[in-house]
Image (cartoon, rainbow, N blue to C red; front, side):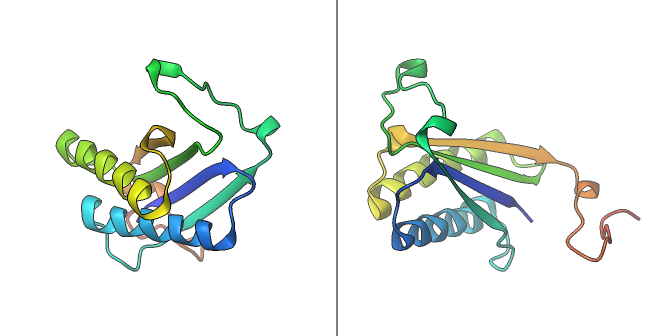
Length: 127
């Protein structure tokens, strides 16, 4: 069950944010093989002064449309699956949301299953 944070500069419309959430969730489900009902996603909007990023790190030209997609998920996916996920997510955000692929920063944070409690203070994977 991933926990997804999408951080962006304040200013996108409610419709744009909803579409971004849908595209990210859909891609997590079909590329990372996560069940469709495992949707825990946070949109975080910051003023530009509070969202500092290098506009040309690694020779990638970023614009004010830059966003970060950070996903905390269970460890275990292969490098090939991750690489495909990065490519597909960037392309879908470009095609469906008009976000430049250069403006899509993706970070996967892998944890073991005992690091989750989904509610009631219960850790279902600690036996």
